[in-house]
Image (cartoon, rainbow, N blue to C red; front, side):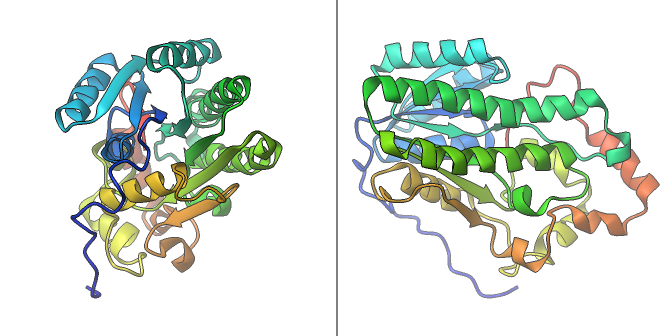
Length: 301
């Protein structure tokens, strides 16, 4: 195990860095979305978390408020543009405005491309790509109408530009969100709207890892042997980066995608390409067992 520096336990930013700002977080009820929402609350922002599971959202908002944050939850399926427009309307009415957006709602599963169904492809692409476009447009229109500056942050993945085996829908969708980020960074810069992205590497979350890391032995291949720093990311590290990119700490950062993966994408393209070394029939059985069950609300990365 290589030597490492421990992430700071003390605050990194001033507690009023984003005081008075309202940030909408899609897929904010769990995983990395909840982590980033907590980090925003810690610097004074008010967060509106949304997702498809009202119970999960309500509990997440209560958790944020219990630790001193200002948070509310609203149910929304980002695949539906009418629901997204209604989400922005309700959030802006309740909070007075919206200043920023985190596109974090996502879905993903492992599947050999030859076995991928049209429905499986649509489920991921509509959540990740369509949902990000719908939310970005809705918040962008709100900011433009207010003549207000703002910031949009989208959560990607290092394989957005390399591609990866066994996650074809996600690779296609995340690449599209990266293209959206760069396109609108130019088009909307005149309005004072900044668009950036983060590409996290391995940050363990209960939802994502249950669908993407099948067996204990594979964790060693996927993480320890591929990450030059020899470890997974800690959630606080991602939260600090999200605050930096959304806040006035980085007012000239626009159209960028910041990778936070311990250097793993540089050590080998395709986050799940290591799985090609395993018996394909055995892999398919494992992948099928990991697929989300019908009725599962999905969520964030």
